[in-house]
Amino acid sequence: MARAPTPRTRIKRGATRARYEAEVIRSILRAGLYCHVGVVHDGHPAVIPTAYALVDDALCIHGSTANRVMREVRDGAEACVAVTLLDGLVLARSAFHHSVNYRSVVLYGRAIEVTAADEKILALNALVDHMVPGRSAGVRPPSHEELLRTMVLRIPLDEASAKVRGGPPVDEEEDYALDVWAGEIPLRTVAGAPVSDPRTSSAVPEEVVSRYHRLR
Amino acid sequence: MARAPTPRTRIKRGATRARYEAEVIRSILRAGLYCHVGVVHDGHPAVIPTAYALVDDALCIHGSTANRVMREVRDGAEACVAVTLLDGLVLARSAFHHSVNYRSVVLYGRAIEVTAADEKILALNALVDHMVPGRSAGVRPPSHEELLRTMVLRIPLDEASAKVRGGPPVDEEEDYALDVWAGEIPLRTVAGAPVSDPRTSSAVPEEVVSRYHRLR
Image (cartoon, rainbow over all chains, first blue to last red; front, side, top):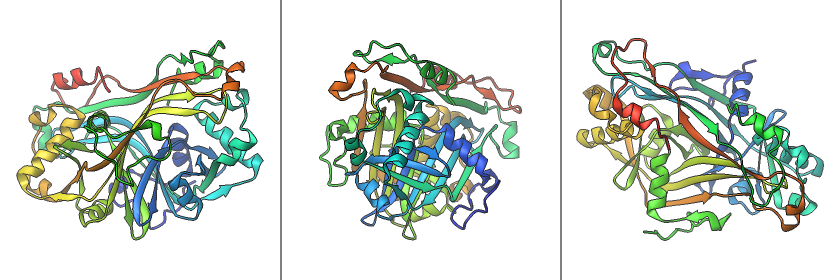
């Protein structure tokens, strides 16, 4: 289902690449591993990379209760969250039409702090499971003190838009006659063999093996 | 050479991961393929992903003269630029100590617009060559009209910091006794075989083949 874009999420540049369907937005957010969170901090822009997870209809981020950007967002500052997946380099015949193939989401919103211990644990488990589905069930859960030191924020997916570009370059018609190779260099993120911590004697668990043989 | 951090670039969270050496910052910027630019737009945060290149002591970005974020930066708004390279997932014995290995740079600055045609072409070539070194020499250069439609901004690398995390998880001492596998899942970006544009009959050039057999 497509949500109507707001004046802010309505994409003006490259409008043909804009996507507003909730399923497109969610699939990009499921595929990404980290986001960039932008806020206005003392009148200045600040951008930090951080992990995230989807919990119901919200994007959850977490951080130390001492983190300045997190505190700003917790205290009501609006956030702009970007998730970008680079799918390829697009090499055109002209310098001007060089581009990239990508899937990206931009989300605007104000956060709701998750304070109830059970909801907080749910969100923190989702953050671990976003890295490796199923992992949270097998690790030591957060202690009371760890919960107190961790801030969890939910940003509703209400005001989000996606942009997707795929396919070959689009050159000026007269440039197709040039003897210049053009095309796409597909890019993807792949996992290497898991590196066991020197102090672990446990075997690499099945969920790690299965997930990281087919990343993205 | 390390540049002294400003109050803003001095890293407070995870200070042991902070790096201020110009060479570390430049090497991360050389390895990245795109950045996220944050600005304050009408009092709200806005973050956009975009390509960049290093030209001398500045990070260059480009965009349509109609792009709102680019115009904001051109007109004097401060920018916060983040480049993040995800090197691995760090799976700890406790949910709390899950982390990621990464190299990241955050740069604050105000842009200088590049307006002279020759400098503009130099920066636009650098943007193409950042994708594929040497490519700009073989493609059709920007026309006069394309130059007019493209805005090029230089953001000096004066106020930048890096953060780097590598290695295994760091767990609470008592958790090392748990029978939970811990370790790192290394991640990297790899290129697939170049996909020729259906309308090209030229061979894949050597610079594409050589560059993308050893990405990052």
